[in-house]
Structure formats: C-alpha cells, structure tokens
Image 1 (cartoon, helix red, strand yellow):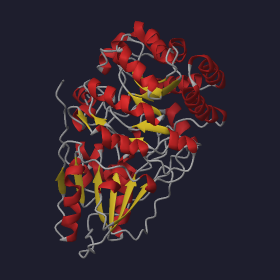
Image 2 (cartoon, rainbow, N blue to C red):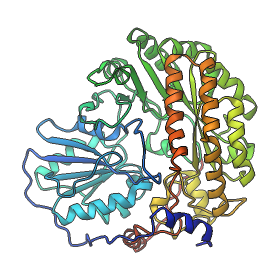
Image 3 (cartoon, rainbow, N blue to C red):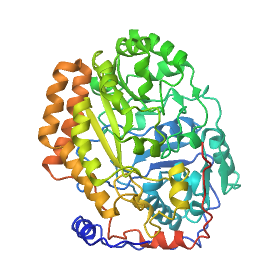
Image 4 (spheres, rainbow, N blue to C red):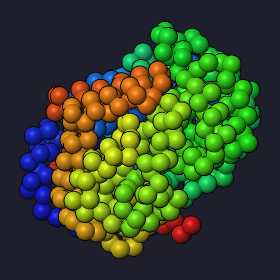
Length: 500
C-alpha cells in the first residue's frame, strides 16, 4: 500500500538515492566444479550506508566475521571484509564467498552474490535474514545456513572439497563449550574498539520487535576461563583497545550466578567493559557492585518508550516509566554510564510523544541515547502483527529495514509524519546543546573510563550534527529495483511467529 510521499521523496532524492542499478542475472550460474582442498575464503559482513555522509568514526566491529574465521579449519586461508569500512573486491581470488547480513542489508548482499556468481565463485549466505527468508536467499546464492553456523561450519567446507555442497544447512543451538577466541588479527584498523567478546547467548524476555528468542533460544554460557582468555588477548595497537572489552551478548546479566562469578574473576584484569542488559539489574546491589569493581563503564538498556501503551506494544512489561530515573541513578552512583535505546513508531506513539522524548531522556539522565524507528523484522511478533493487519508497506525493498526508515503503516500517524517526528527527535537529542549538557553532567556522575566513553560517543553524534550527517531516507528511491523484482517473483508464504 503505497502512500503519497512528496515531502519524503524530496529528501531522499537530495541524498542521491534515486539512481537504479542493474543487477546481472544469476539464474544460469554454475560454480567452479573443482575446488582445491586448501581454499581461499572471503567472509563479507555486508553493509549499506545508513548516514548521508557515512560514519566519521567506526566505533565497534561486529563479532560474526572474526568468529567464523576462528572456526575455519587452519588449512584454509580466510579473510574477513567489513563492508562498513572496507571496499569489497568483486575480482577477489577467493574460491568461496560467505555473505553475512541482516534484513536491512539483504539487497546489497544479493547484488554482491550475483556479481560473484558471474565470476564462478561459490556463494554461501547466512545471518538473521537468511534464517527467516531461506527461499528468497536461495534465489541468489549457492547455499544457505539457517540458524547458528557453528554446528555445520566444518561440514560445509568438507562438502565443498568433495563437490557435494548442499543448498541448505540447518545449524543447531549447541552448547558454547568450544567457542574459540575470535580472529582479532583479521579486523581492519578503522575500528576504535577492537576486543569484542561473547560470554552468553539468549535473553529471558520476549520483546515483540526482537529476533533473539528465535535465533538464540534459551540461555547458554561459555566456560568462564574461555571468556577470560578472550579478555586477556592484548595484541592491539592502542592502549584503549587493550583496556576495553565490548561484550556482544543479548543480555549478559541474565544468568546471575554465572555473571557474578565472571565479574569476580575479571576484577584482577583491570579492564573497562561495556554491554547490554535489562533494567532489572538495578534490583541486585551485589551485581551492581561487582560491575563497578570489575571495570564496567557502560550499560545499554532498551528503554524504548515513555508511554505505557507503547511499552506494552513492545512487550516491555518489565520497564516501568516511573522508575527510569531512580534506576539510572543507581548506575550513576557507581560511576557507570547508561546508554539507552528508544524506538519511534510503537502503537501508542504520536508525533508529539516522539518529539517529547528528547526532553524526557534528558530528565532521566541518559548519557548516550540511541534513536531508531520500529522495524518489524521477519521472525518477530511485530512482523506477524503487521502482516495480519495488512500494515506492512509491501512495495518497499529490504533496504528500508535498517532502523531509520518506515516500513509499515503507523497506528496514530502517517509514514511521513513518523519519519519527520523521528528526524526532529534525532536533531534535538543530538544538538550541540544537548550533547554538551550530557558531557558536562558526566563530569560529576561518571568515573574516568565511563566519562571518556560518554564524551566520545556524544562527540561522535555531535560531529554528525555539525555536518548535517543524518540518517538516510530511502523514500522515493528504488536503488535495488532489480533485486526487489526478483524477490517479488518468489511465491510468498508469510512466516508468522506464535505469541509468546
């Protein structure tokens, strides 16, 4: 259901997103039949630019690529290419191309796959989008991995060697006992923080917009000594890279006995660390003290909204608006910074309530806000709800599913009004005045590492404000038209997720 977007189309065309690109046909592809036993493998973490002028600072890398590289048999030569910071070489000498991506980057992944297949490469795709849209992905690549890849990774390369590559590999959610240290040596130098670690997978909550309950079922933990080995890895160039640990966990604190023991053993290592967790950690003073003593400088909370109706729409019943300020204060009392995510476009939202969030997040003491638009990814209850109500904007490409564009019909406004309200919120929250207020407050509420984190992240957004480097609007554009037309030709069986 296409709505008039005159106002939005103008913005998008000014940003240079009007040109269509031609995608070569992939239907006649036959991969090279002979593959050497010792292969060259390129793992590409696909990316589509989300800001008008790109990122000035690349803060933290994804974990997937360097994790898969660590799992790859040693006889193979593996490279990891992060498209966010590196140019993808279509004439690579690699025998095998592995593409990892989420929904917002799917069109670019499919474009790359088409180019590599023209050159006779074996192409394999995985990631959240592939898991929930396998038939679609198979139109563009030779093989797909559904679910987690660890349990099938070795088998894939054995099959390639024997010319028996399967179209589908279904990974199992196996114990994390043998997860190796990531290949940090393969990271490009552009990332400010380089030590990314995963100690756990899974989250006990079932937020309506989140794919974690399906992708990472249950709560699993790695052996503490294995996690400590990752943290001890110190072959980084700069002191802050050797000092800082970024935990890429769904909810690091969900298993309380485990996290408390891990933090006790981290205390002698004298690191700074950041992660995401749920706000219920503020009820556990012992945990908060261990976080402080082990070097925590920042916690990300998914606050999402200041409206009760919107919180219920998000499945965030554990969040209580009246308690936000006091809970954040408990972190500040220990010198720990608070990063917080806020979503625009939930069913209780209006343009006014979205714009008001700029003042509200300031009042409760958020140190670094993250502002996105509700994105109903496949595999979530939000997607099923929108599909059932015929609220998905079905004429849009997957590039719209990047957290900064409107992919559905909002409940209390038009798509144009939602996009404008979000951009107004973005400009207010990241105005130079707001940024310097947050930095100034941190001088009195945060300790050294946390204050540094708050300052750097806020200045990152401040630079965007100074240069008018806002999120890109794709409205009125169809850069990946050929990809979208191929996808539209696939018989559609909507995938729904049962209520949890």
